[in-house]
Length: 192
Image (cartoon, rainbow, N blue to C red; front, side, top):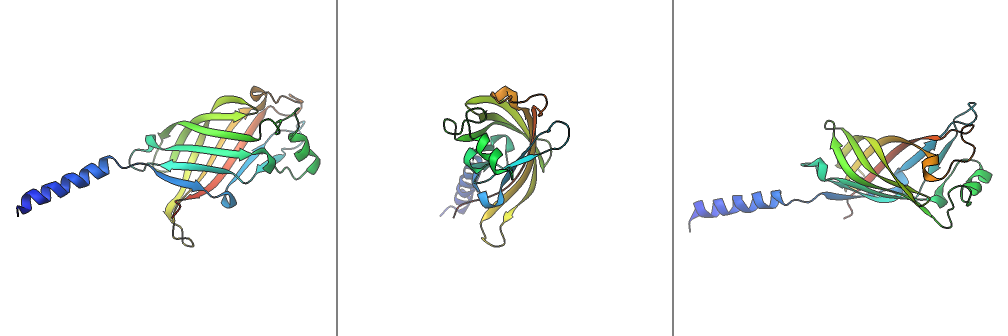
């Protein structure tokens, strides 16, 4: 047996395997994920709405972060403003028209690395059937095996902002602020 040839063959196989490695798919954990929207209310206060039951996948390529991607679905039925009447109003045609457009979605189109922990994620945000580009400033909190589940897990915080009128939801602007600021925190794990 030619051990030199065998070693070269194994090295080539390993190199080939590494070169075709695919991004790892992390499923978003809705119980440890929150998306909080805030806006200005007549200059007096800054109310917020939280969305829960968020679903999606974060594909992570540690070697080539540009190959990473994010795909998220936020059900309008999960909105919580702590004001029951406003939660119901947001479902109506005058606002988000949840019967026709039950979900808000975000699909990334580009991931840029600022350093090992900070990323700029450009993508398409769709609200009420209107799609506009937005940029998320994302911070990697941690990437490791989860101490409870032992599954590979990743966690991010992210922020962005947009004008709600661009999505056909301009009610009461400018008295109620047009600019929506979004803060996101998420955990996602590889399914075993």
